[in-house]
Image (cartoon, rainbow, N blue to C red):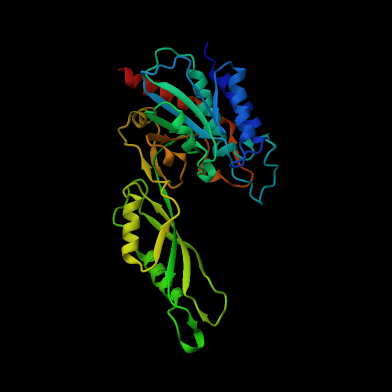
Length: 361
């Protein structure tokens, strides 16, 4: 017997209130993982857990069929100082549910969970469904989805739940952070000695601020480079710095690999650039992918997302989509409209109904 939308919505809101009321900062999500685990246990649905990642599969899982992942995260950032409400109160007021993680990404998490319940005991689905509530998304940690994937069946494609106003984010910027070092020679400033590493850094920063990569994405626009930190090793006013370090934040569109970006930068600056990580790559899903086609058929639009998510860590095609508004993420007095959750459940089901139907035609 399938639970109706009203019941799914009520259960989703009740679960989200429990999650909001429980601190779940990145790397500290054990208690919310247990809450989600117990939710499935109470429904007699076999549930598995690895670290603080919890996952379930549909009742009639068939190893011969492809797997569709439904994923979102249950970790949060820490509340910023501008909060006027208790971030853990889970306050319902004027059609809104306030609380830390309500919008990013609690609403998407419980909506996808509701969709999984809707399909859980359906027989003869063309795809298996796997729901995973994962950890450490907010810090792109290695004990979240990246650690979980080796424990899961092979996945054909997925939906990543993040606040997108239930529109389809089909491309996502990559994040490349560079630690750059300019090297000179020390000397006494009064005697005009040495080779000033700061001046070398300034020349490189000027190039970084002016250079424009040729390929501009229709979805994500140009590659953007921003120098965000600079420092020298010495603090004395009369010593020419022998070393100057600065940090470059590079937001990469889907038309470039990180290797191409790095090669271009290093060819044009005298300083040495070292990437902190090559994990958070830009991603895209083709507009003719069945998930995107199904979304268009139910009236959803698509766009390129400037923000990153666990989508970057998945070696298969994914669609980022969920209730809530990215502009509210990490804001003071974070909230999600209750009707956004209900609409999210309805639209996810409509999307998967069309997706499944298209696979069987």
